Length: 198
Ligand SMILES: [Fe+2]
Image (cartoon, rainbow, N blue to C red; front, side, top):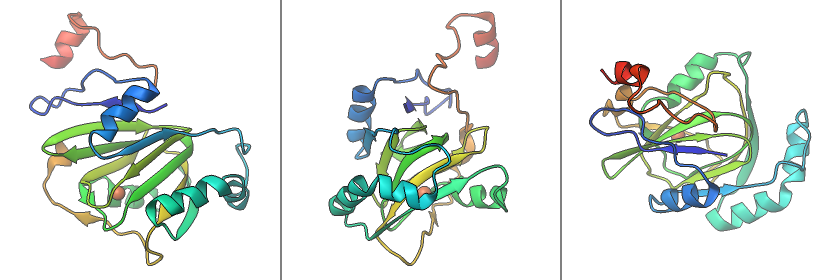
């Protein structure tokens, strides 16, 4: 399940985590972002990319119809992926794309930051989460601490996936911290909480 937060724009302190599938879906829909929960029971963890694409053939075809996507693939990133840091550095600065960014997370966790109408939201995604960012949405992305993610991606252009950087610097003001679905935030009024806010 995803974890949605709206960090305070002035202090950059994470807001309260918004949980629950329907609430997350509604909050993201208001920003023009599609969020859904899909079943994960089609494939075992070590299934090949081809087996994943075959197992989710119906969902892949339906998503192609919804968004005019022409192709889909499976991306696998692990700490052993060559040039991992360089790869992540391409996407952890604020950017847009000239096509939608559509991901169904099979395993691992990552965090999207969305910058829409002057407001920033962080969406930590994990297994079973489908997120669809329309083209032109300003965002950035990185992996959580385990540095692992496996996801199905859809594309409108076969030519490739290019970030268009905004060079706004907004991304530098936000810590890419993943807490996982059970993190409840710093206790209000605690000594630790006050220290962290100082
Ligand atoms: Fe992106």
